[in-house]
Image (tube, rainbow, N blue to C red; front, side, top):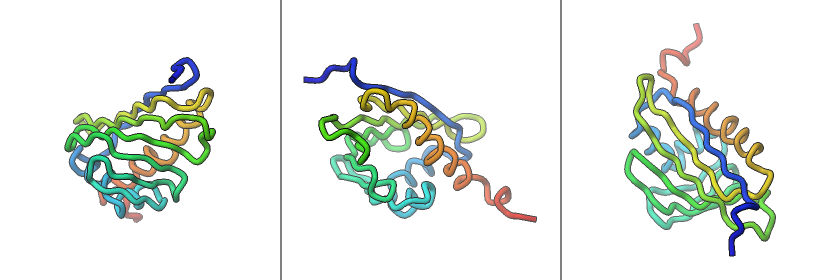
Length: 142
């Protein structure tokens, strides 16, 4: 039985300077996902396949893959209390002027942890993704 009053949900987004197809493909590719998060990731583009991210700190399962539009995953951190259910992450990709707006809806988080996971998504995904997907000309030092 789930008591939804004892869980946190967060929603956040960032504009990444790449098209949705590029970001979606990289998210579901072990090598590229590892590169843009600077951590070891094992993932495949297959519904009901398990993944490991964040150097083993995160595990989950791909539940829905809507090509270049949406990824839905069960998601669990090693920091979750043992009795906590897996959380649910929905990543959506929307075309915008300067690239793609990546929106993360993360629900069913253990109560009181939403603020920490919001910071973690920003620090471990959005910030490095902006650098990884930046146009090559912007990366070169003069």
